Structures are given as C-alpha cells and as structure tokens.
Image (cartoon, rainbow, N blue to C red):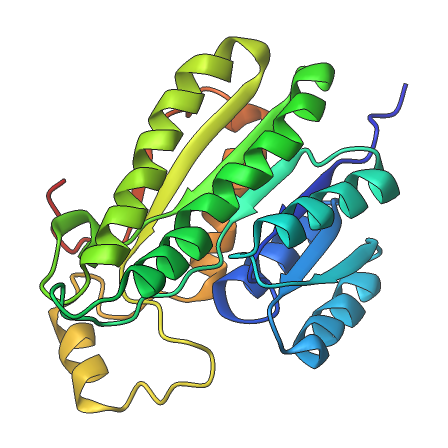
Length: 248
C-alpha cells in the first residue's frame, strides 16, 4: 500500500530559510502550507515553484503573533490536507531593545511571535500526529539568543522558551512517534542582502569553512530530521554554523 502523502506547515516561508525548507520538502513529496505576514506575492512565487516540483501548496497569510489567526491557519491546513505531519516554527522577530525601556506590549509581541505561535501550532497539530503515530516538530533558536546578548533580552527569553518546549515535548511524545528538535543557525544572510558588506566579510573570514550559510544548508538538515532515518534524533539542539564555537 502506498504511503499517504504527508503535509508540512512552515511559518515564515515566503523568503529565505523558510522558503528553502518549503522547496526541500516539496521536492521530497510533501504537501506544503506556506505562511507569510504581509508579502503574499513572495508566497505565490514559492507556490509556483512547488507546483513545478509536482507538489501541492496552500497559502495562509497571517501574523503568527495573533493566537486566533494561528489557530485558524492550523484548522485550514488540517481541513484541506487531513493533518499536519511536519510543523516548522520558523517565523521570528529579533529587534534590539534596552531592557529598561522595552514596554510590556513590545515584550509580549516578541514572545507571541517567537514562542507562543509555536506553542499554539503544536497544540493544534500534535493530536493528528499522535493519531497517525508519526510527526516532526522543528523550531529555531539562534546563536545570540542562546548566549544572551545585551539589547536582546526578550528575544533571548523567547528562544530559550522554545528550547525548553522542545526538550519537554520530545520526552512527552517520542514514544508515540513524534520527535521534536530545534535548529540553531549561524550566519545566514537574507537572500537580498549584499554579503560584501564589511560585517559579513568579517564573519566569512572567521568561519572555519570559509563561507556563510544558505537556505539549502538548513533544508538538507530538515530533510534528515523529517526522514524515517532521522527518527532517532529527538530533543536536540542542532547547531549549523560551519564550525563557529558556541557554548550552550
């Protein structure tokens, strides 16, 4: 009997890392649920590429910091495809902000986008994963957030919360076929950034492999994590940075 086609929901998937993950999973045969907050044209461009790969996609535009909209997005995806088998919580904001001047409203905005969106999506998608006895949850932290940097306290707290959720869910659902991991990327410039800028060149020169990251690097790691062969990788923070030392 042929395996039922699986579905992946990727937040922040109109551009950059999210776009790369969507295309990798479409190439692997997944239905794709694309998400963006404002640039629908970018999501439509990705949809066309997914169609060329022979996969099916749907677009759900919403601010993932809005609980009701996130829950509605998950419901739409499940209504269309039957379940969400792979959840990739990629969307995030990383603003600078003095701790003493950051308002509670801004703090909550960052927490809602970076952490609570993943929390609400997991609550919506995990029941279907458990019913099938198979699922993958992948979130993203970051090198700055892991170490804690001045001016990014809200970002650091939100990303540490995701790391805590990852470890807990991996233990709660691992025996039921659902794995949960978190990826910590190094320097991955946006697709439209000029990496000839001095700050990027300095980072490039300091990297042991002599280059910066790209979306295909992340996509290849996600390919492994969602594969059946990757089912023993669970509860891990996976650093992908070319060898830059990072303690956590």
